[in-house]
Image (cartoon, rainbow, N blue to C red; front, side, top):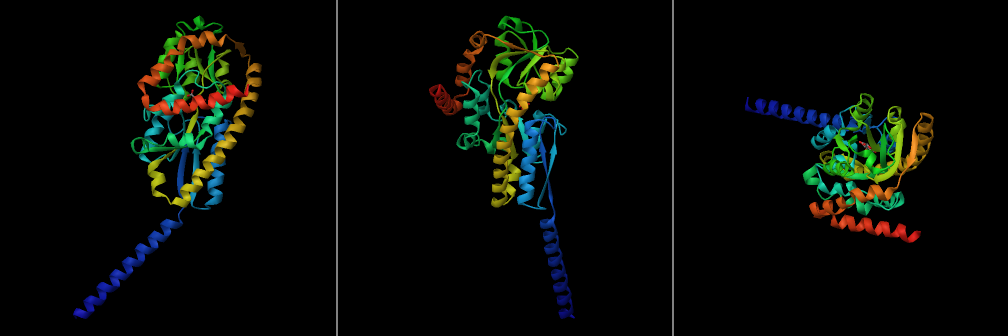
Length: 339
Ligand code: GCU
């Protein structure tokens, strides 16, 4: 009798073990859905970069991951999506460095006005992986890892009324990316800073909530901001990248080999993004002209004079960026010596 019971228990344990094993096996075979969110249209260079990222990973790890790309803030504005990255429900996000400042103050480096001497210095800086590694030191606190950075050209003003001199900005309502130093910079220019997410700018321009914004030329056409803001003034006050970040919860639970593939894919995506950016910007400028946008050259020094003091303010308030700032100076010097 006792033997009979023992036999039944053994059979039960064996079946349970088989089941667990089978379930685990099925789990391993299942394709995992991964979400990549960004705020751009499907014709933006960073969307092409996202597609490159997807194809690379899916080709190297067939049937293991299915990367779903969500453009145009369809999973929420970056400000909100960042919390979901932290929780791990969005795995990848392309976000302006400005949006990351609230999580890791070192990204405020890029909010320093007139930081780089030219775009080449900016490009060389953000494509240097040793530099990007320096932005990874606070991962335990932020919950995301910057994989790479995307190029976003130079930000200048585009407005409904023309800006020829810095005084023209006085009292104008200008949208800024929601970051503490962007608000202060706009106030130093004499304008009224209106922080809002990228996706809200079109409506705000249409409805007259703002008189203008600042961005690279692509926004005039891709986001159709040029329909309302007919003047683009080249004061060139800021160069900040878009960071391609991944949830650290996700990266920690996958294998070292897979992690390596995601990292490689991000590097490939960066190469594509930069090439596409230059192409798109050239086309955007031509298209903006045919939309009736006027491009204005201004005396850049006049604009610089108003905001340059912020450089020291930011360095004093965030001493942890000293080392990164000194690196920028080295990249700048290389460019200055070339000329
Ligand atoms: C640029 C940048 C975006 C950012 C946007 C903005 O286009 O590439 O990442 O979101 O500006 O002004 O918000």
